[in-house]
Length: 316
Image: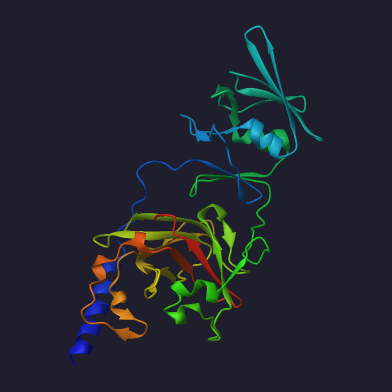
């Protein structure tokens, strides 16, 4: 009877963490860095980074983007006037530093924001990339991402993502039930990914766009927030030589982004940890769990049949 009461109490504690649904999940106070994705892969800028100017225009360093798209960049100067030209197979763009307009294939177009020189790099409004280089370009206000080109997501099925045998991952498989598919078959191995690999499709199922650690609703503390194309998939914190810590989504805290993605939020601390490998541990203090002790986060998906997927904890 005592064990039953404790089980009920644990359930109540879990529900109390979820809240009423009227509270919001707090994002980071500082705006995130603008990222540029070329054909769904994040571009790396060695120095000057994309940014939003005072008018809200997204400014990108044109040289790196142009060269990545196979275009040639030409710089020239006449007196105090600095000019930049871009030539590709099908397009030609002529720009003057300090102006808001450019000649795109011989036609003058105004972009509202000045073409500027910053950190010895030429920054142009995002729309100029679209019109000047003939590329499909989208601004993703949720992720603060610039999408250039196609949206054919890489998949964990790709050969670039190697399979780690489950026997080589045994320090994290103490709770083996988390490493089984819906057919109750144990996965032969795990594909390990990094935050820098996002966005990525898990097999042929959900697309995981981003992962963040944010302040949760009410008194729930920190939550892991995962932007995904699927709502409600569970995750699991994997701690070396310890039981796995499963987490269900806080459904009341789900955020619909209205772009076919949503924010799934998971508590870092949960009374579910009173249950370890199917057994109730009466005196276990689940409140002392530190997220930094988790080396991986298992991204569980019912449509993954051949392997598990774990992302290295980016918040250690």
